Amino acid sequence: MNYRNSHKLMWGLLIAGILLFAVGYSKNEMLYFVLGTLCVISGIIQSAIFYRCPYCYKSLMDCRDGIPKYCPHCGNELD
Ligand SMILES: [Zn+2]
Image (cartoon, rainbow, N blue to C red; front, side, top):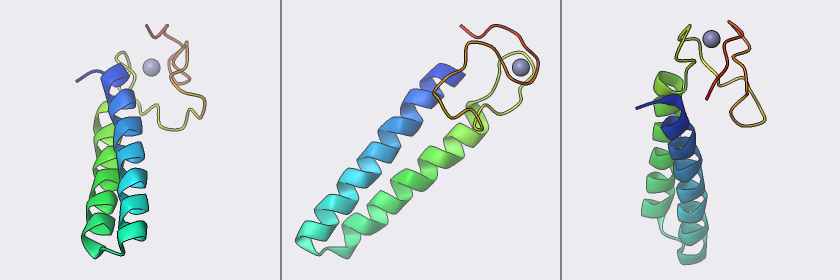
């Protein structure tokens, strides 16, 4: 998996987790909260593993505004 797919997957899992929380809240079902938590946690874990610069392998997690144009660690262009 490359950093681009990992970034998309992280957002997909975070949104899925939020939706599961919303469903769990409206149905008052604990199971949805558990599934939502698992989605959010797995999203964070996979991005900690895969969301990295392909050149220096440092994490891009501290970049707040999506995928940066250049790696903040080594300066290589990300595309
Ligand atoms: Zn880098």
